[in-house]
Image (cartoon, rainbow, N blue to C red):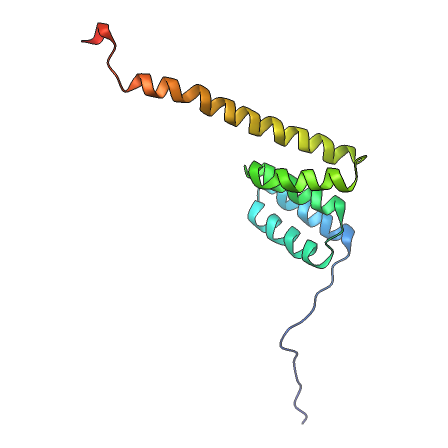
Length: 122
């Protein structure tokens, strides 16, 4: 009887089309943490994969992490100035940041007023 040896770490290879399908399914089902981690793992191996970098940025946007997505999108647009989907996604992220900043500025005066009694309340 021979003893079998098992590798301590098995390498699983995934073809890119199946991986993209996996990421899109995770995004659609709301498994954003898994999708982020998987995209980062892929990009760690294939850092020049622009479409997957865009997908990662879109996952961040979907997860509400606009501030983290924006620098990635800007870098994509600098790398490929004709990458229309990256440009549109970057514009969407900038709009969200602008609306957030605008919302905070508008909310602050009303919050300050709410802490004081109006003359009619005295």
